[in-house]
Every structure is written in C-alpha cells, then in structure tokens.
Length: 116
Length: 112
Image (cartoon, rainbow over the protein chains, first blue to last red):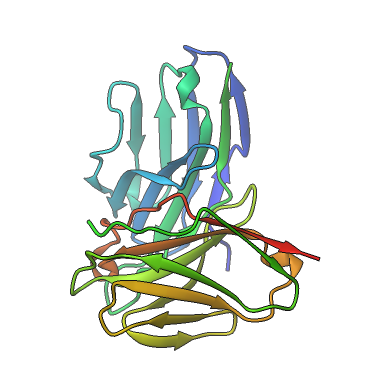
C-alpha cells in the first residue's frame, strides 16, 4: 500500500515568491494534516481536514498561507508571498478516524523549503 | 491540552535497553499516550500507543503507571539504526487527533 506522497521534496525560492506543496494521502484516509517543522523542533500543526472541511486552521497564518482539499482527497498548501522565516519542512499526514481505530498518523517524507 | 516533558537528548551503547521517560502531569481521562520516531529527512513514524499499564509490540514497550502522569518508552537491545528523535504525545486520539501536540522530542544517539 502506498504511503503519504508529497511533492516537491525540496524547493528553493527567493523571498516574496509564491510556493505550493502537494499531498496525496493514503487511500481511504478521511483526515489530512499539514504540519510545519522548523530545524530542531517538533512538528507544529497548521491545518487539519476532515474530508474536504478544514476543521482546525487556528495555527495557519492566514495572511500568507492557504490550503485546500478538493474532493476530500489530495491537498495543496500555498504560501504567497514567502518570507525568510518560512524556511522549514512542511509535512503532510493522514489518518483514518473513527470506527474504533487508534488515530495513528501516517506522515509523508515532507517538503523542505528554503527561502533566500 | 496535556503538555509533555521529556529529556532533550540521550546516549546509549549498542545492545543495551533504552528507557525514555515522558512526564504529562495534566493528562486527561480520555487521553492516550503515543510515541513517534523520526529519522533525519523523514516524517515521524508511529511506534506505540497505550492508555494504562503496559503495551508491547514488535519494536518497543510502553509502561504507564497507575496515575498516568508519566510514561516510559522502552527499546530493547538498541542498534545504530535506532538513532532518531523520539516524541511523546498525549491526547484524545479517538476524535481526530486535534489535540495532539509534538514537543521538541528526545534525540537518542546510539554509540557503537
């Protein structure tokens, strides 16, 4: 079974440029998460989707970040314009919630963003 | 939200048993304790989850005392490939993990 797929793995851009990250969750997983991980820190939740609905976006910097999950499957996270402080690894995760499961999160390998 | 505290780093020799303890004094009744492992350039990977007493799987054991205010991840006979960051998370995973927060984790280094 394929895991969570993210692209691109690496992205280098200059500040003020836009950037987008794509995530394809595990088939059948209804919940999708975007996390940001700064160097030496644990992942921080940016947004969580239940199917196509964003149920927790309280940590998403809405002035420059946006996300969508059309049709409740793939998701895209966009930053426009990027700032130097946005340099980090952006992780996507998915899980199958409900029906008595443990809620284990499955993470992709992440997209490493460097803003110059 | 239940906050967790764990050592920043630990070193151990190959073949030894490693125990990483996590404190979570304000754990709630519905909260589970979950541990993740993260290698460089990879996303975190689920290791084990428990609610009380002891849970064991093929890679680790999780010990949880009766008051549930702490938990200990036990890795038997570690090898160099166990070098990674280990995160302890506490939250009600039955409702979508919305309360799960990663801390800074414990950086475990295995010495040959």
